[in-house]
Length: 473
Image (cartoon, rainbow, N blue to C red; front, side):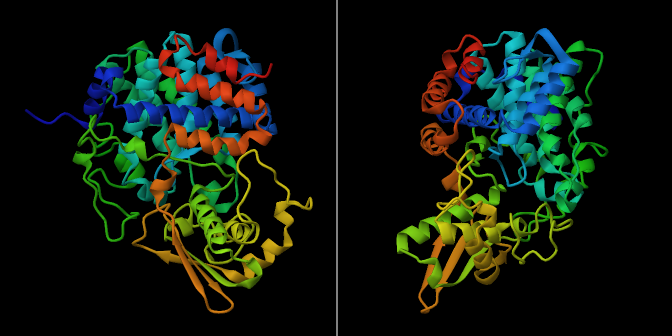
């Protein structure tokens, strides 16, 4: 008997997945991902761009019996709520990340909330659907992200749309055939270009929100039943992988692993349901590109551990995976002069850590101790130009920087920050979120209520409590 297609394998697995099938650590991780996104929604709710997006959704898609917009409480269409809530999370700049260039939280969490509310699903159903969607998406993109970016596509909305389609279909109660169609439709709806991050446009701010809309729409159309999804949607000769990576047979143009030019397309589902890639999702706490977060934490730790005075530093060398230095892709780098210091790049954040001992988390104070705007901190600007240097390494794992700090007296300090240190569980995330309390709009009591609600998400009969604890009094 012929092996089932990738789409069929994923659809069959997801259609039969039950809460009892999930390991405890997977349930815990999904709760952590949910908490991170919801805290981000509250932190982003008052950002002007998010407010404008909510106004657009309410004015164009208001629906009294529709789905709820977090914080605001307004009711809009299912796709409108997914879009607006994605904008709240996205504008907070507090995303989860996988393999550097995908951010599923701003897509999958809003999609789960809107569908669960209107389909009257409980907390366990949401956890199951999110676990399936995260795992499906991570397995799809795992080895293929650099090749997708090299085609000119931004990987996050491309792969997130497929995860959102499967997620929507599950919460809408679709059977295996229905999920095949939802995945196929989502693959046809996937979009998002890299020209914005390459040349200065900001259309990427709607990539994840639009992916949320498209994923919900894929589920809705699949539920109508008149579209039959192609079995070979993913690996077919003219399918998803051919379009978005350049090959349906696993040929890679770029890879995070030096020398790897071939992926095993047939092995994408190997260990499905037993081995969980979603456990390696990392949490971004700073308003910066995810690959800069471990750089800040590493240098800040070294500064504290060794009592380093920035005025005594001769050089800070940051060792990174070479693809990270050429964001969004070596094929289309934002800055061809990748080792030139600029405000907002790795040199800048490394300098902040060396000079100031860190950088504010999302929602944190954006001014220094004497009231100066951090972007105008002259010590940092001078330091990054004179003392910070990036070192490309093709064999270094992504999101796992190393640093060498050389002092003017010749003493050298070295450090490493492996990726795994950012793949937190729920308790670890709760500790990290306390850093946001001073600027959390609902204060520490509000954050505590959110944490307690998410801890007990498996017992929720509906999503109503989540909307309550993310809304101002």
